[in-house]
Length: 74
Image (cartoon, one colour):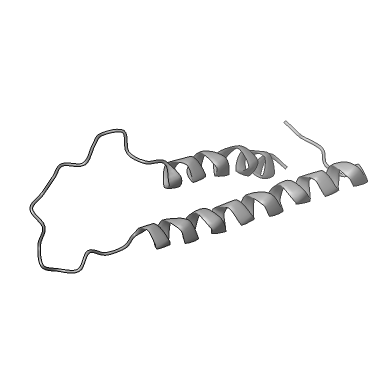
């Protein structure tokens, strides 16, 4: 049960790290003729996958609480 609670707390933190923009402004660099890689799609897919795992984890916890089988042990 501790793993489920830890996952419910840690997954949103990981989602913030994945989706958060950097605080520093980017440095302007002269453009190169190469086509830039679009990493925003990869970030969105990663964010969506982590978000779905988090939703499923919370749903499982709520279902176990409703059944009365969710117990936190020391």
